[in-house]
Length: 592
Image 1 (cartoon, helix red, strand yellow):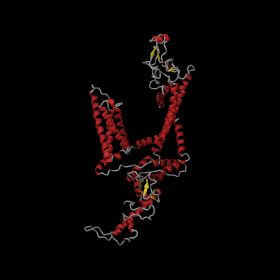
Image 2 (tube, one colour):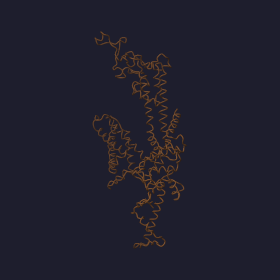
Image 3 (spheres, helix red, strand yellow):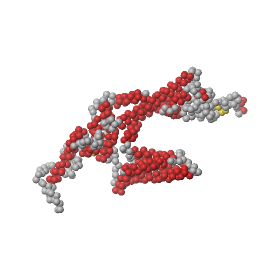
Image 4 (cartoon, helix red, strand yellow):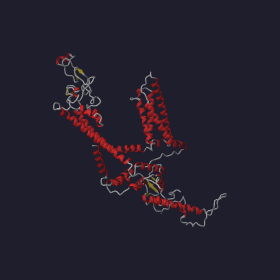
């Protein structure tokens, strides 16, 4: 069943994504483009302007500081595991542990407060609260302060135990995922869960609707099973009244004796038999923890059955009173009061006397259909289908472009764009490729590429140059296209991708491209070489400083400079108004 559901789910998903009429390579390239468009460059905190804050800034952004905080969190977890509740005054060891825990909680609170204050100084309040992790840390410090205050004062000031606040601090351990950059498989799983959450929204709505329908049906047909008088208060009639003398009510009021004693709403007879002790008809599976006596309990019971826990035992209790030990728990007059009369808990569906199979048929049809629809199709089929599909796209090692490669590109891009502005100078492209590993870069290429081969690769990428700058999304798309890019047909899916590309932040603000990044790089390189030549020619005939034994530069072999070109070589010169668009400016020179 699960295999059929997963196969159907993937087919429908491909139809909705427009991949049905595409080849496998085309579908992979479309998925890669969607992933690239969703990516955004990383941002690095800006250093403060005050010099006295710079050491604090460097401290809170160092890996050693993060590692120290992680160690503190792990030690805090250990002490949370040995917490004790209400230690006995006669047990000195338990009292000592409780006292140590109290002191340790204060120490951890001080450490977390120091961390927060250091980040306030190094990052500033505005930059501190922009980070979601920092907001979470600040909330935990406030909760810890309230926890310490509530623990040292009367417990009546809060409506819940102070230990609940203490447990909230345990969520800090999630921060350990920030430094586990080498844990590739763990990061893949976390990314899969994060990407799958939006896709589970519609499935959750479907699950809620199916669960509500089955819960209402159960509440109307099986609410009387294993019912005990007085167990539902006030819906069942209230207090228990014991009848004696041949099961006739014993009247204590003289006025009632004259007119006849009325029947109480809830009756319990002294000789009535109950399956369990304490006057209760609860069974092994349908009991006070799992039943269908109201909508809330029906939903909770069906959620438990959806996971496969004891669904068969609940199904057996829902069958007729002739099934197994059900006759020991039913009572002809112990059902809920309806229209002033007690009902029977032995025949919830009204099929008594039609045969054993007919009496058990409603229970069989209901529970088996619910288990197949909810357990196999929705939970194990659709839910797992979404997660497995995303895991295949994210964690597959056979894909040309993986999420790990894209994350590596973002980290390298951060070195040239610390503010996350989406653009960097075009002459930085070759340096980025030299730092990226395969498949996006050439860092681990064996044998190493020559300069001519690297320039040829820049030409093949054909990354647009926007006035001396390249864009994050265009660069990543070009690098990915070099590995798995193919021609795709024009359809609704590709049109949506084009629309998403047009909405990429920072792209509309750039000047329209006139040439690619290779042209800008070559012009910048040529300009750099020409500047070096001009400087050598300018100072070739100058005398050296006294005491300098360096040989003089020969001036005979250098050709004369043209007057109309010399002014453009100055760093302070500005391009003329008649310069063509996209011409390399003086500050766009490839560094030597």
